[in-house]
Image (spheres, rainbow, N blue to C red):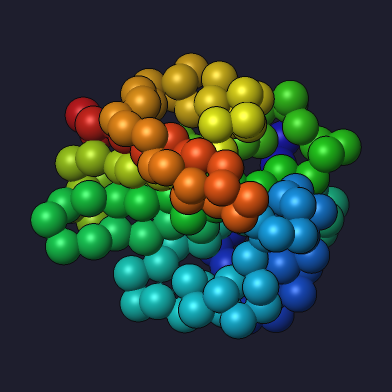
Length: 148
């Protein structure tokens, strides 16, 4: 069973490399963008580790108006389909609820059917299409969920 723990600055390079491996170069965050999201006072970043190896992480934040936002959820390919993404999602939801959030939003590319199925299995619904949201004029979907 993986251990969950909070982000520490020494984790930056490992997490950035995981993000680069999980997404195409035109979609993955630059080092500068990634650092920006992690430095936010409202950010919550949780890692899943096994034997000191980072298997994945989730990065989210909360906005005024009681809304949470999932910035990214990354699990290394060799650790997928083992429940790690679900563990991370449950933990970020718990933390966003504790921060006063009553809903969560996220964006996903229309061609990422695996992620869409995952999010739908966690209670997210498509709220609207985001035209040309991703590079190459790829549409995105805004998905949301109410927290109970």
